[in-house]
Length: 199
Length: 159
Image (cartoon, rainbow over all chains, first blue to last red; front, side, top):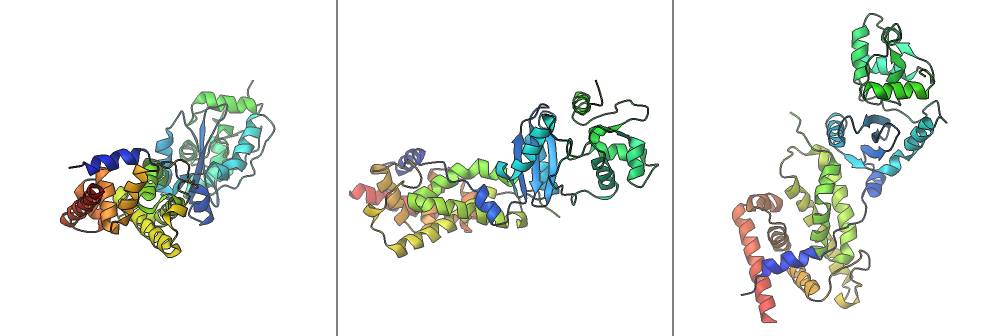
């Protein structure tokens, strides 16, 4: 008797495995809730993610694994998370220009809708600090409408989902101490040096 | 209570090759590309509404099966003689000759047997998972595998 299952298994090994791409069709259908891409930078690879409304995430891959970041987006924004590098081309270009010293302002839209309350206010206030300038935790707490909530402002900055684009590296401790940074203090120093605030 | 669903990209990466092979095997190379894209679009459309995050493979292959059946119907309507279809024209290398004849016989099986035979024999899918895929009892899933294999065996022995 012939072993038909064995024949099927072996024949299946020779079937083509590479189907056509799906991300483009998915975007046309309006089903791409979260598009992401990996972007190289002098600070190591970044995961960058956007909804149709704008950016939602920038993350240092060496600091937090890509899988973890994608799982968090699936939980917090939508499980319709797909790799779609073309969707992130504009912000990739802006980041390249910024790191090459040719750009001081990011034009890409930010999707603020997944942030709430004081965190959102603090991050919006932070986004308004111009290139080459710095503020303090007390300063952004004040700008966010709660001058006494300095510690809460620190927590909000520590949870910044879009470092570099929302420039939390421009927020220092009163008295000029650098304070902390989610991607590690060397990255904060690098960015401040790039912007001419540190030698 | 909300259910945790992994990022869709993880599902795509884990299953895309298996889904594509399944569609080439059960719907034919000339139909596979469209059926493949339609499978993922339908899956993505329904994904956030899923009530449970287990058995994602069975859920996905049920969608693929439906797209394969649709492609079958379209193929039947066009009634293209098999010899005139440039197999593999759209998707690179496709095994011809012996393998293609084998898959053509698989395609002639009733839809549930086709799916059952492929998923069991090639993917090694457990019967409880296959039952979820076919929306049947485990017993019926076993029967579909058994009947399908029996028919293929008879046909291939006859020749």
